[in-house]
Image (cartoon, rainbow, N blue to C red):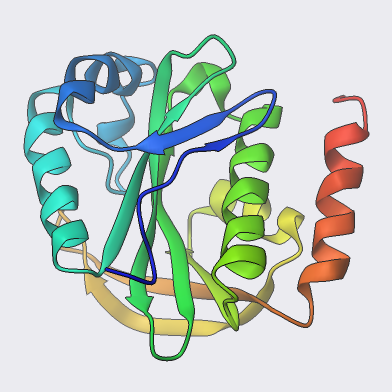
Length: 197
């Protein structure tokens, strides 16, 4: 995994640290805040399944297809998870996904800051050509958040995935390209400086 190595990324409201098995208890507590695993349109591990999900992500990291992070709030408390996934080192592309946050930090500066950290690292350190975001077509909260970052909708992959309840997910695919990054970076810096309403 020479191209994509574990790294810690920090900002005032959020720190991303390499995911570790000893984060399981704190991440289980974070998932309980909002009972996120009950949302039908997304896949958030249940508290009882957290250790298995961490093990799954770490195995994908060993295989070179994912780089998972634990998200810490300003106090250093684990409040969620995020990843670089669907890693394509040859074409210098990653997807930012498998992200979830405790309800108490949703719609705060933390999410924008996490995405800013991941995008800056992808474009300015890894020299990515493009970064993707994917979500359920009907997950309007996630789609608004992705669009607010400045990502462009590439299209909808229809009947793309089988969900845990057996329904088929239409996947909305977004991306930011390297040529767009300077404008997106300025936009994210503006959002971070702007008082939250």
